[in-house]
Image (cartoon, rainbow, N blue to C red; front, side, top):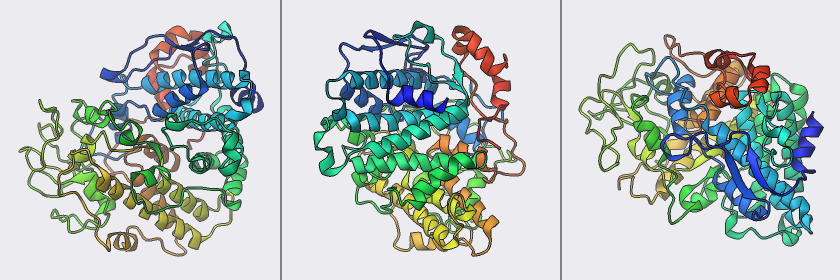
Amino acid sequence: MKKNISTRIFTKLTGSAGLFALLLSASCTKDFEKINSPYKDVSVATASPVALFNQLSRRATEEDYTLHIGVLMPIANQQGVQNVSVPYTNYVSSYWNNYYRDLADYKLLVKLIAADVNPVAYTNLRAISTILISSRTLSMLDRYGNIPYSNAGDASSDPSKYRPSYDSDLSVYESVLNDLATAVNSIKVGAAASDQVALGSNESFLNNNYDSWIKFGNALRLRYAVRLHAKNATLANPIITDIIGGNKPLPNAVTYADMEAMRQNNYGNYPKIVVPQNPDYNDRLWYAFREVSVSNIRLSSNVWNEISSSNADNGSGIFDPRTYVWFMPNNAGKWVPQPQDKSVAEGSSTLYPNTDANAPAAPNTLADNKFAGFNFYLVRDHTMLPYIIISEADVHLLKAEIYTRGMGVAADFAKANQEYQAGLTASVNFWYTYVASSTSGIWPSSKPTLDANAISNFLANSKVALIPGDNAGNLKKIVTQAWLTALWQQPEAWAITRRTGLTPKAAGYNPQVFNKLPYPNDEETNNHDNWMKATNGANPDAQALQKVYWAP
């Protein structure tokens, strides 16, 4: 299966001209994307590989952020009181539909390259396109488990594929990780890239920096080697050994002069950089935060315990400098977290009201707000806030876990501690570089600033610092910090929570068990036979109890 899927996707895709039809793919992200309309993309006669790549890169982080805030954040235990029963019904389809549109575009791109008179000139374009679609595919597997893959998105060349079968998630993980290795190793850099098709401004993801593309691909490989290790060390260990033992390129800047330097080491979409004149990505976070069904979220007590050394409501116990970017105090200017166990309720206030001006409420202006909340300015800064797939901090913290557990390389406390501290430093610098760089006008003139000793004090705090010989305690700290670092990357925070079982949670908080997203309802209707094989007819609630391949 691995060879067949990989070969189809990366090297030997051929097919006739025509419109690319796709299994019920559409965008459906509440107010701003279509719902359940059959997807048909550009024809082979009018499409170009460069234009298709441009589409893939601009849509690389296309999400329904109400899923993140209203579904994933509570089950990853990263917010105050929320629905115990996950309100997933409206939010499980958009990533699925957007992904299959992109998979069709990718397959068309590969076919066009194969048919070109000089396909070698597109080696880099095909490789970076493969990295992008691999990122999307891996996230699909994390969310849904088994998915249509090898026969999906190719209905125009074979009508029998209009209703594609589901591949096992393991076979797709194997295939995609193989594709990633092939892609990374094929990228030409420096003078060797002189024969490659110039992408110019169409390369809006990493601005034609192929060294960064190699780092991005390796970062994804490392993430999934760690993700899969406990279940399949035979698959994971060679990847870790290749990357860590082989000293393969990974992001390693730690500090950033500006947003451009940041995006070359923290991979995702940067709206203002990608679309300077109109960086309106549909105001994604603000829509999610002001949604009535999820707008009661606050700074959660279990998160507060990991960023403050005391419950002093004047904030004197705060030791994590990211706190001042992520959160803000209550109406009275006090740092009061909401108990995650629901022992104290907020009341009737809406913390993120949808005002006529569609602007953030100023701090200390909502009379009924008893608890500290997520920073208004952050959730409103949709033109400047990066949407990250994998950050440099994530990579360092993965390496810290690798060296602590001895995964694919020898256990080494000194190296684990070095990577751990580098990851936390990179995370702090990411957030303060973003705030300092924001020119959206959303942040007030009194932006959070990083004190000279803030990072060293953070790293030295007893809740953070690793201790020689305390492997279990160190592992819990590493996982906790990886989980906190992914606060604004909810699919990753949810994966860390499911994979490790080590993330903080209040003893009395018991949200609905939610191990995976149910398949969209349209699959039951329009791909019924294959859906039945994948689900045995289970309803959405029962599907959500099933586990993806790597989950313990």
